[in-house]
Amino acid sequence: MMRSAFVESVVVSVTFSLCWAMVGRGAPAVEGQDFVERARRIHAETIGVDSHIDTLQRVLNGKENISRRTGRGHVDLPRLRDAGMRAPFFALYVPTYYKGSEAVRRTLQLRDAMQSLLDAHPDQIELALSASDVERIAKTGKIAAVLTIESGHAIADNLAVLRMYHLLGVRSMTLTHFRNTNWADSSTDKPEHNGLTDFGREVVREMNRIGMIVDISHVSDKTFYDTLAVTSKPVIASHSSCRALTDVPRNMTDDMIKALGKNGGVIGINFGAGFLSQKEVEAARRNFAARAAVDPGLTGRALDEFATKDYLDTYSMMKPNLATIRDAVAHIDHVVKLVGVDHVGIGSDWDGISSVPAGLEDVSQMPLLTAALLERGYSEQDAKKILTGNFLRVMRQVIGR
Image 1 (cartoon, helix red, strand yellow):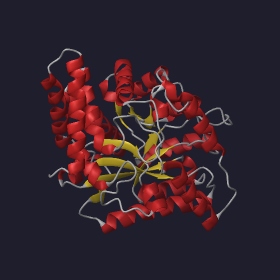
Image 2 (cartoon, rainbow, N blue to C red):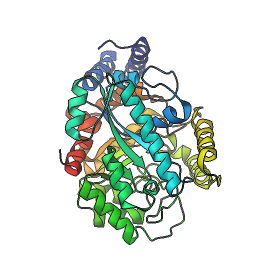
Image 3 (cartoon, rainbow, N blue to C red):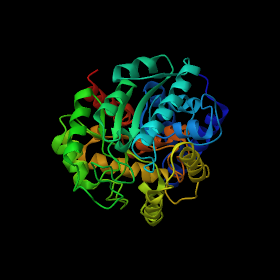
């Protein structure tokens, strides 16, 4: 496959940076070049799973055609292909100020936006319902789109709605977002339920039964442990990082990561600067509080118009930050030291974060992360587990194929 001039320029820039770093330590410059070339080969050979991107928000709110290189945001289909990240989980994210049937309506709008993309570009992207589908679709050179719902309030407290989402192709759901649902506490809200309610436990059991992955990113610590006590299958933290390194409630403690490992689950490292660097913590906490407080008190078209403006105002401009690609590597490394390489993956949160690490400004730079892992001493097999194998394993265990 021909690589774009943009991607080639990124690779050249990164190669120079890595080589310079090696020379600075007295190592031969060719060693840095080797890391980049090996990373490029790994990304060409593997599928590349990202367990959480918010790019459908740009499709619905910004009316963007992501089938071509947009020059905006973090992701489009050409950049996914160039980076070798061929199996993204597209989030159907509905802000928590959509309530009840309004949240269901907005979820269906996002699913319709996804369908429009699938229908318009069948040569570039196809819906994946299982790990086998991911592998089959990726072999054709297309993007294998996995659908996930971000926040259980989108089911409007109704298991029938959950089942209908599954029939529409949704294969994962986070239990909460910035606010509590009526049946589960969030990490960024005042506890109401002491974790999961009885209905929340029913939700987890039903997700297990129908083959939908339970995602515990955003939930409170108590909700997390309640979920592990109920689930019969592995769970994921689709876009979280390590609280020991960056002390925000959205990140997981070491004990939580160890429990997730025992469950057989996977944590996808979030690339938001506020998740990766302690220097960004105060800004991240202010942002979480501000986002959770938004409540326009609107319905219907007026609410949709508010949501569109809210997203575009929040995420159209990238903010400067102090986090770097090395911070992302440090979080991956921390998980590996705690529970091994089988329980960590990539959950970038692209297009749902407004401050990204230097060196990981968009998906096209993903091979840089792999090069940095190789430089750190990870084997190519380890890198492929982090990029692909771990999340595909959970998909097989939960979905069944």
